[in-house]
Length: 333
Ligand code: COA
Image (cartoon, rainbow, N blue to C red; front, side, top):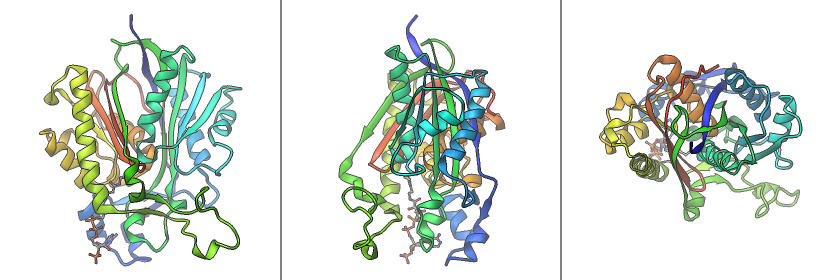
């Protein structure tokens, strides 16, 4: 039996506060019709000021462990661009608060592709027999890094968390992670990011007036790249799986913009209704987007056990990737 990492639990958490497009329109020069027609987004969840990324991650992690009916794992990987603080990593605190003991725990930074990179890393730990079980969490609190005056990013992003438990199992089992494609292009680093606060441009009293602490994105360029890269990565893993594109029952693509999801489906000649769509209610939740969309698709009945599913994402870095698997019989909590 070929050893593989198998999805055995799925949990999600959204902070209770909801901000509608009409709420945004009261603060910014925008309106519900523009946001819906250009992005497909109707509302998003926003964490209250006392809630940090670790709080969302703990809730999602707890639900994933319960969904997998386990109380222990050998490692925790937290994909996030919005850690509680720059140093130390947030994952050890999450592991501690989940009562997981002195397990390996680290953050992984690949922006909106973070969850796929974390799945690949966890699968590697399992393949190397470093771990039998890994908790993989994607959690982000983008509301903390958006420019309050930037209507293009505030319309898109929301806060949330999602997590899966991966366990060692056989490659033929439902839920076994199949081919995984991960890629990057640092030449496009300036298209998505935060200019200040790192080692190149640290926050210091004498430079604060020139600092830009906010997340910036070149929307139209990113849009085109996202479509091309996710379609290409999807093709790659479908081919490596020995499937044909029409075999894909559900495409769970990073929830950035409904027009991106439809353009990816069109490029792949897949019916648009095979795309999981969750962004209308949560916006772009960055590293949490894929597990949140998976849980939503599973609870709506779009995604059922045995289905062939492709996960694909694109984000800052630039980074992108895809993973193919057969969906297992797990209950999303
Ligand atoms: N309300 C009203 N107008 C808005 C707006 C909003 N919320 N956001 C942007 N606009 C305006 C712009 O200011 C611009 O006005 P101008 O022509 O006067 O300068 C106009 O709409 C068109 O802007 P543009 O950026 O070309 O719009 P777009 O149709 O590309 O949509 C995004 C903008 C951000 C929604 C879109 O580019 C997008 O989704 N990009 C990809 C995001 C993504 O994939 N991210 C993945 C990694 S996280």
